[in-house]
Amino acid sequence: MLLNKTNLPAISSAAVQKPEPGIFDLPEKVLQFGTGVLLRGLPDYFIDKANRQGLFNGRVVVVKSTDRGGVDAFDTQDGLYTLCVRGIDKGRKVEQNIVSSAISRVLSARQHWKDILQCAHNPQLQIIISNTTEVGITLVEEDIRQQPPASFPAKLLAFLYERYKAFKGTEESGMVIIPTELIVGNGDRLSEIVLTLARFNKLEEDFLKWLKAKNIFCNSLVDRIVPGKPATELQQQIEGVLGYEDELMIIGEVYRLWAIEGGEKVKEVLSFAGADSGVIIAPDIEKYRELKLRLLNGTHTLSCGLAFLYGFNLVRESMEDPAFGSFVHNLMLNEIAPAIPSDVDRKEAEQFGLQVLDRFRNPYLNHQWISITMQYSSKVKMRVAPVLQKYFADKKAVPPLMSLGFAAYLLFMKVVDKDSEGYKGEWRGKTYPVNDDKAGYFMEKWKKYEPDGLVQQVLSDSDLWGADLSLLPGFVEAVQHNLHTLITGTPESIRSIFQ
Figure 1 (cartoon, helix red, strand yellow):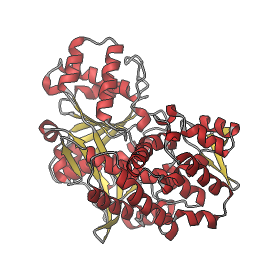
Figure 2 (cartoon, helix red, strand yellow):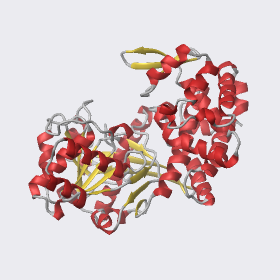
Figure 3 (cartoon, helix red, strand yellow):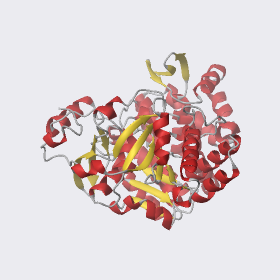
Figure 4 (cartoon, one colour):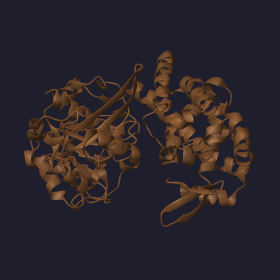
């Protein structure tokens, strides 16, 4: 039996939370760009939870922005999917299975662009959410009258322009727009790009005034580990207990946070926030962004290459290894936490860090290290470089574990081949994918330089990092030493430097 609206009444397992039939009659209040697991496991989770409590009473129409794949599974399952929440909460084991009914329908930008624009005519639609990856919020000068425009900001502008024309620029027709892409000031950046695109398209001045005055672009931060579809064996086990099949099933941890920058108007529109303490609406969310970006994401970034090269597949299994677990613990709390480049209380950072370590150990999540290496270079630049510079400024010393993590990054980025599937690295006889915008750059560097020269060249590349990292006293030498150890050392000798 497949999970869908028709079969929902036949699902009798007490191990799953099902939606009430009345939820399917709720109006569409949210336009969401992206079908990814993070959106389905966090914003859509909050909306679904609020609907069950009668607090929001609205559903989500989703735009599938990319050309890859279709919307067949969402159509077949009427937008329903199971979120399996797994983890430890305050020492208590948590296993929840929730059939989410937040999504009303999924529309392909390529196939259903006119239907998407028609959504702009819905007066109850007030919220736009996006997660198009960090690369998605990029200025591409293009005609928004294309069917559809190529970039996400152009699609968004086309929708807002349709909204403006449909309601003749009334105050009530303005939208609350919340990008969740992990870039600093994501709402501010998206607003800036949309305004630039509006001017490029020579849209009328009255529209520009409405765009700036009546629409609210919110900076936001999302934090929940949602690895995605369960492994086949686990999915079959869960489906056996629940009594149905689900092509869209996802796993998510217990911890959840959606911090949104906004005032009273934003709170009024985002009424789903009252359903869960994980939604925080505040005038300033910088503290939450820094804690998450540095301690969780930064630690992931500095650990993923080392963990993968050492042979660990999953985050949780590497945390079970005493030596590597010690590396992650000391890296996070002894090097990153004291060097967060923002006004964050040290005790609060430590408390948050300990919570993150528990999340890394979550026995229910199969979070793969190789997936964390995607767009590795941009992650190092955004998440690590500012912390590295702050550490040197404050401590006047080389951070040994950050240096090791940086060396592992350079070794992981030793691209040896490119085929129809993309760039490849090789380590100890096994190839692996290098999904990084800078893969070609590193392929050339590794061909041209020996390890010591490569370290010097890459660290001094200000275009790559936004600063010359080779000027940090002793950092070049430390990375060179660690890179030699990783290349020539045995697993046992490498293991010794974890600690």
